[in-house]
Amino acid sequence: MSTLIIENLVAGIPGKQILNGINLTLNSGEVHAIMGPNGAGKSTLSGVVMGKPGYVVHSGSVTLDGVDLLALPAWQRAQAGLHLILQYPTEVPGVHLDDVIREAYVSRGRDTSTLDAEIVAEAARIHFDMALVERSMNVDLSGGEKKRNETLQLALLKPKFAILDELDSGLDIDALRDCARRVEAATQEDNLGVLVITHYARLLEELRPDVVHILAAGKIVKSGGPELADELETTGYAGLTQ
Amino acid sequence: MSSIALYPGVVLPTAEEEIWRYSRIEELSLDSYVAGLLENQIDAPADVAGIVTQGAAVGECGVAMPIPVDAFAEINAIHCSGAHADIITVKTERGKSYASPVVITRTLSVSGLLAAPRLIIDAAENSEVTVVEHFLSADDISSLIAPVVEIRAAQSARVTYIAINELGNKTWKIAHQQSLGERDSTTRLFTVALGGDYARVRTEARLVGIGATTQQVALYFADKTQMHDFRTLQTHIAPRTSSDLLFKGAVQDTAKSVYTGLIRIEHEAHGSQAYQTNRNLTLSHGAWAESVPNLEIETNDVKCSHASTVGPIDDEQRFYLESRGIHPDIAERLVVLGFFNEVLERLPQIDVVSGLRAKVAAKLHAGAK
Image 1 (tube, helix red, strand yellow):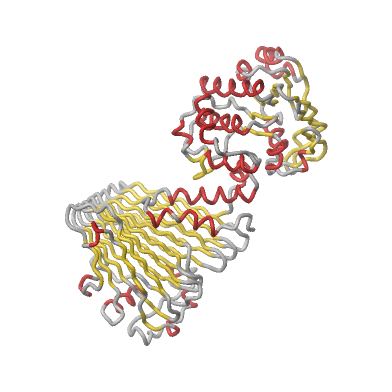
Image 2 (cartoon, chains in turn brown, yellow; image 1 turned 180 degrees about the vertical axis):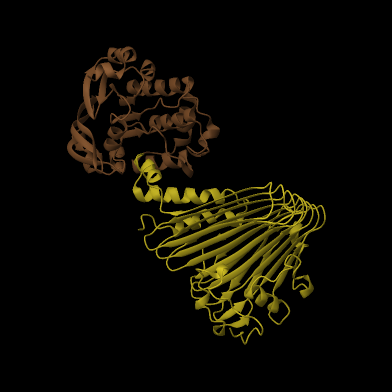
């Protein structure tokens, strides 16, 4: 079993502190949801943990099985077992999914001899059109296709922990179900630990959280079971962040 | 300005002229060269063997070049009528499509020469042909090549021309490409520039017949102290003509590149559309690229757009690949090769083209700053 621990994380962008001391422990196979209003620091948290350029860490730590992730560049955090699905997946013109996955496999010392078959099988599982796999990464894909593409990469790379930053944004109901179910399956098949960041509870109907955290003004103000998400639907954030 | 002993009457331009701005023309001294010839090899399979002629009459020159262009085109014309004439003509038959490409390899193997070969592609009505002109020299060959290609596409003809520059790093090239598209014709002018010390291409697609279409596409990649210099013209003369230009380049080390492009839509060319895109990657701090797009429109009812960018590899693209566990050097290679893929995918998939991706990759030293 693996554990991702975020302790007293204080971070932001140059000149502006956004996260004011985050504490969170995530174990393999668990799903934790982080919910919060716009501006609470949800995307900052995912960017800081993955090592996205542009963020500054002031204090605190993020460790994966005792490895200090904050000391590593992004590519080594990924190799340590962390995966990020961005809210707005980046377009990389002329670079195809299989090129990326092949290099990602090679960098992990994995065998690539069955990669093509793995891609076909995973694409079928989340109803991702193989014709789209041939396209440039995220170029000319709809919102739903982009998130299917992201989920496909997650399924192939089999990380220990995944951060899903607003996987549900801009997603039609079918794509939402396909992506959420695939992630849910990975928590069981591969013991994937998931930190799912979302504004709305609807994603959590398909991807059932073990723990729900409410993030407001850069701090986790409340944690509880799945019922906390339902409570949010009725009371809104105002009632919970007082 | 004095004219040159070798070429009486020819006056070299200066960098004061807009079309030569940013160029290295001031470094050129024609006195360091003597007129000479390069070696030609023509690969024309059976179906195209009969349409290629070497040593055509000087009268053939100028089918697609009614207007004097510049000093180097003049020099080329002087060569065509003298002892150093080097003219290859590809002349198609009406209504015939040729499946095999004509591949002309032009090799410079002597230093101190000025060679000025000419290629004439004259495509008869409703014919289709592909011609590749491949320029080669070894790294220590310090010579100047001033090639001209002129292309006439008669009504409904379809011509694809591909210039590949793999010249050595001391060779200069100052080239001119000119196409003339008649009614409903399609002309495609591709350039892949990897070599040369200073390598310049002026390329003009003139659309003189109603409904004519043209594409101008280039990939250029300069490293060390190389400079690639492109001047493009999309000239719409007839109504309902369309042009599409995509030039993508990268500069590495202290290399330089220049792109200036003009879309010109003349008074009669209503209902036309013209697109122009130039994108440049600067892969090292010491590298430099300039991009200057221009429009000149003399009529209404046209669709035009131009886009131009110069900059380093996008941080978000790099991060995206790194976040998959890919080393930054490999992420950078993927992004650059992806950038060029858009051009490579547009090129006809023939033998001489298929090795280009690997040549681009070999030139790229990942992680260069």
